[in-house]
Amino acid sequence: MSSTDHPEHREDEEAPAAGDDEDTGAQVAPIVKLEEVAVSTGEEDEDPLLDLKSKLYRFDKDGNQWKERGAGSVKFLKHKVTGKVRLVMRQSKTLKICANHLIVPSMTVQEHAGNEKSCVWHARDFADGELKDELFCIRFASIENCKTFMETFQEVAESQKTKEEDKDTAATAGLLEKLSVEEKKETEKEDTEKKETEEKEPEKKETEKKVEEAASSA
Image: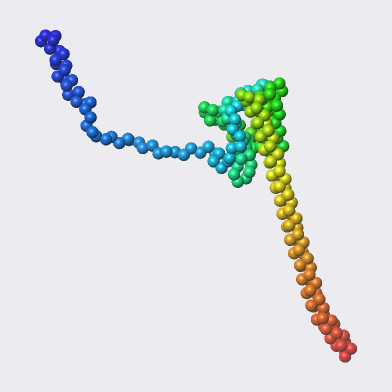
């Protein structure tokens, strides 16, 4: 057989394969049907008060130096029911939490020495799943953003102080009310005992009179 026969022979063998590419009109259903999954961020019950791009640092006591915690969005979130406000920051790409702590009345924030775009504060942070005392430093792209952050921080701390005072006032009022109720019950008890004594007094006198008469007759 000559060499020219080989291409023809190959074409005959490959001819049926050409039909594999023809559209048969058949519909192939996907093997796995993916359902849409709602992703919870844990922030559904909170309203954002502030949302700014920034870079966060924490002070490493062991190394005596600042270490970068992440770059992303820092937020103040106010709970719709309790009114408590927390600071939350996540890294931009991974969404990993860099900071997560409540803003309490005792907190203060101040400008970082020598840098008007940065500020520092102490907090009991829960970003790593356990409470830790942290010294944070946050840096913004502009002086204006830094000032806005500091002003909002202080306003929130002051508002939480008011809530704590209201809570203490309510607790004190409740205690006083409880004491008043107890005093009222004690007074009512004394009045009841006095009334019962007064009601029994005539009977006592009558009994004493009969005893005296019996003694005289004897």
